[in-house]
Length: 240
Image (cartoon, rainbow, N blue to C red):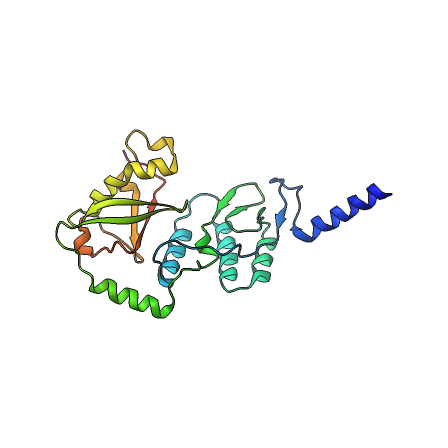
């Protein structure tokens, strides 16, 4: 009797913390979704930049099913609005599960994996306020790079959220910067298909303050500030 009672209590506790079933193709239980623990971006980031990063991320998803990405996006938007009940309802209705209870890792009913950056469903603690954002952008416009000035750029490869610094010159064109990034991105992604040439510049997109940087322009012409993070997106199709 004692053992049976213990098993029943354990089963009750499990049912309180999980949703869905473990009998599907994925074979994983889905925990109740929350925004997850607080986190910091680690560098200057504004609310508008985060909005642009989210739009860019969901617009460039090619793996998995598009309808699942739409479900995940809707759930992320609900979490950003503070509505965890709606986020859970959206996911449950579409049979998309979240084993950890945090949206960073999701699975559809066929077992396909979907990874989501934290900034898509929870704002970082060090995000600039609206007033700070206006001041930052005003200061950014006023800043001017000197010809030949040496700078250190903050880069982030999406969607793995790995950051690294790259030394550059204000006279460097965007395509030259992409060439310098080849080996960095190959090392971070660990994609053997990129070797021996690294990630070709044609397969890279560099986003700065919500816009894609044109290859032919120099960093000075674009007035790229070292205070802001440049997002690098890698196209799936490889050109060598």
